[in-house]
Length: 162
Image (cartoon, rainbow, N blue to C red; front, side, top):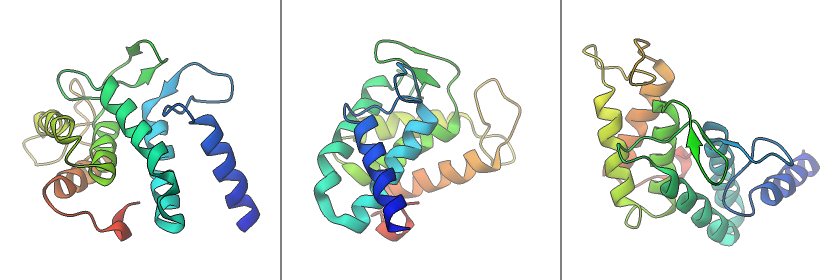
């Protein structure tokens, strides 16, 4: 198990050296939902292995902030130069959680914009729609959004990172 974790860590760190995780080796495009999962993996490694991941996490969080749309959402895709695709609640909430863990003071403007986007997706039943044009009140997106809102207003306990 330790060997597999060490190999995964090495692969992860190599592919995301710039602060952005491409979809696969040699690819230009990044699927932001997967990127956020990779960053959450680094957060878990940081929890286990100290602060050696802090500089990488800061680059990853800053890259997310740089691609955030004016409405607070995160795009589906980005190739390092441009973004495309529909905005989704899950990746936007993941970005909030990442910013809250990495540096909630520095990323407060991005957190607030993202929370406004998520609030606009709330359906009358209280759940969060997956996307602005979607009628799907998505359980996963709702859970992510509730946790993101909670983390944005309270101290983040590291045991609840993932």
